Amino acid sequence: SGTGMPSGPLLGFKSVPIGTADRIVVPEGYVAQVIAPWGDPVGLSGENPAFKEDGSNTAAEQEAQFGMHHDGIHFYAQEGSRQGLLVMNHEYTDDGLLHADGMKTWTAEKVRKSQAAHGVSVVEVAQKADGQWEVVRPSPWARRITARTPMAFGGPAAGHALLRTAADPAGMRPLGTLNNCGSGITPWGTYLTCEENFINYFKGPDTPNAHETRWGLRKGEPAGYRWSEHDERFDASKHPNEPNRFGWIVEIDPFNFSSTPVKRTALGRAAHEGATVAVTKDGRAVVYSGEDSRFEYIYKFVSRDKIRPGGARENAELLDHGTLYVARFNADGSGQWLPLTHGQGPLTAANGFADAGEVMVKTRQASDLLGATKMDRPEWIAVGKDGAVYCTLTNNSNRGGNGQPGVDAANPRANNSMGNIIRWKETGDFDGARFQWDHFILAGDPANERADAKGSVKGDMFACPDGLWADHRGVLWVQTDMSTSAMGKGDLARMGNNAMLAADPRTGEIRRFLVGPSGCEITGATMAPDGKTLFINIQHPGESPSERSDPAEPRKFSNWPEHRAAGRPRSATVVIRKADGGVVGT
Ligand code: FEO
Ligand code: CA
Ligand code: CA
Ligand code: CA
Image (tube, rainbow, N blue to C red):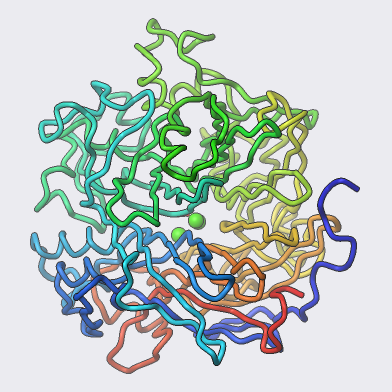
């Protein structure tokens, strides 16, 4: 067929039922093992601070431990499928859970610990003779990248006036990465981590200007973080360009412990959910990325140059030169990629874009002017083995609301509580300027009374798709993120806990593979090359729908994975294997 898809059945497991228990449920014949929970040491040389379940680890200890709220993840095999590096994002912190006394006091040390629990972990993992996996400690690759790690800028906005601050007058040396949600990998062996809801960390000025308002900066301290009280960098009234230094896709070389992570400004600034790389037939890199925010956009970057042999070193500037596009989905099933090229169309100095760097910093404003399609919260993107590109649109309760954009062909449901998976096929190669699109699945529950919440699911029902990953056989793995405040109520009354499902893109059949513990979402997926080990993350077990201020609060909802009376729920990686040693999903 030329699609690269196998002809036999893709899904061989018996699906698991919807569940509400505080545990992981996997299909019959599968085993699940927890590794790398928040607070365990990552294996830095000479530093192995043990996790203290009363939350009393210091900021310095947290800098040597796994961060909180695991998200995107990738396994880089080194020796076959039994040893390699695991690189993962730590999206955000629940400060009520992170500190011994929750939010009762607020200090510089607590801000520093919160910053240390963000970012990325690089660890070495290996499979033991009994099949179980372990984190190797110490390891020469073990590394923590946090909200304070020195980084560099690359691409057209590097050094731009909008990126310059008092601490970095050249606009070239940002500090740290945060809200690292989805991730991606490059064919030259690097890791891409994405800065999603960065604006929530900044205290806004009394009167935000039009640029600040478009990016969601509001007057005063954002709820939950309060970093600016002890770290002035996060007070945008004093350092107005600091927010412009976040919202980027950051490239990390996990095999070089001392490498400097680089924020790639040619990929545009957005609340990037993830970054998924495809390669054109002539060897150029194409990076797809969605911006997970209501009524924001889907982007693709096409590199100017071809990928060169020689790994990270030879491709150190590949993502600095190219063209960024934003998607328009037409009602007739066709689509266009609109270039964000300075000087073309409305992207001129007269319209507020002085140069190419300013277009990259003000990606949202540029996309507004180009007439791109405002989507229902684009999350992860996967390039299928069938050559199609799939994107989860998680939900959008504001669609069709008062004063909000109405439904359109690509976002067809008002009060979209359930989410969709949209897919498109590029015309020609991955760098094509046009595409054809359709909906792979409208998520939903057929028993719902509201027509817009029934969906078109063939198989096991689900809601709010977020994580999306295509494995080497072509299975599409879908992870759900129903928010804690909506879970178990209204349209989601019968959906249970968040889950992971496997879809066959040829037939649209979908089967529930895993149900997570209470209050969690399922994030990130990666397999060993032989397909016999699947790594996923469990994020925010026990997330409380109420104010996050008291460490005891989450325990009312979950105490996963240890279930110790005085313990705390911990985000962690889960390793899933078939008991008979077979390929996961068969
Ligand atoms: Fe961090 Fe869009 O999920
Ligand atoms: Ca996500
Ligand atoms: Ca989330
Ligand atoms: Ca989400």
